[in-house]
Length: 87
View 1 (cartoon, rainbow, N blue to C red):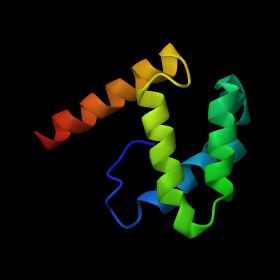
View 2 (view 1 turned 90 degrees about the vertical axis):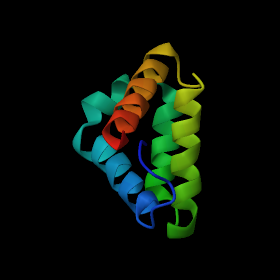
View 3 (view 1 turned 30 degrees about the vertical axis):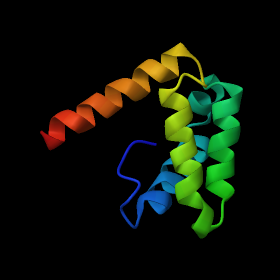
């Protein structure tokens, strides 16, 4: 869940992405680590007020390697691309 968590629609946007991955791309979702699948489902099902915290948790866990080195590398690439766009 890349993006600016301070933006008002961050949680809603992250939940839409989680829903898309889980519902529209089940083959992709099945290849994700079990912990990430569970966190995406929790985000998808979260109440509006909990979405930012859950999306931030996913982002931080990915960046810290909690979902494994492949997800960590992808998360870091996405963060670097975001920083390059802002520069």
